[in-house]
Image 1: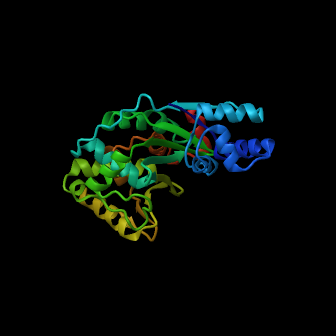
Image 2 (image 1 turned 180 degrees about the vertical axis):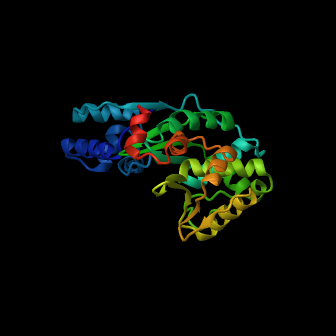
Image 3 (image 1 turned 90 degrees about the vertical axis):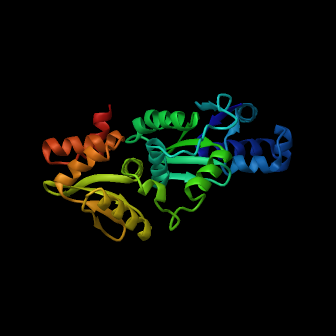
Length: 289
């Protein structure tokens, strides 16, 4: 089935416009569309995407003209491939989920980032990783300045949760690095790469100095990150809301050993190595073009 990707405010406005034009209740509108009232409220709260046939019915009533994007679930396997065997790529994906990822109760897997700065990572790197690990083709949703890379599989969410204790729903105070990942250096490096690519940053610390940072509101998880870096012979500094590396030689080592895949990080590092200055967001966007 093919679904429509709409900005949440547009999806709500379309439904409200149709309801106003028809001067009817939500229940009557649901009956007109041939769907259950609760399904209509899922659409209204933007908790799910509308099938294209439903959208077309609404657009015709409202005389709604908006350029839309669609995605199809036809090519998604009924059951994603998931052997449960840990490897470096899976460890990296688990790190990504710990960063800006989310497992939902309804089976959604959502990874979010900056729609401009993270464009390459979300449109090329993440889909390739999904395909390699699970034989899934994720879709993208853009909300204002944020891009989401999403897939839906209750089976995969349950298996990731059961196998690696990745939290479903609330992550704060529930995150930890799986013991199996900490036991092998190659897995730990991959995990730290995924975590840094989605939730880390490189920034100008002083005039000619940079800093590398992992941020989190969870002190116990920050301690785990600090210990993980220490086990790989880094010397991190731990603050209340972040773990940082300040020494230039250790930042250089980090990019050689952890090997971040997100181009916004590698561009910042390369620019700092050449000029001693970390580029601004404006400079990053100029380079992307």
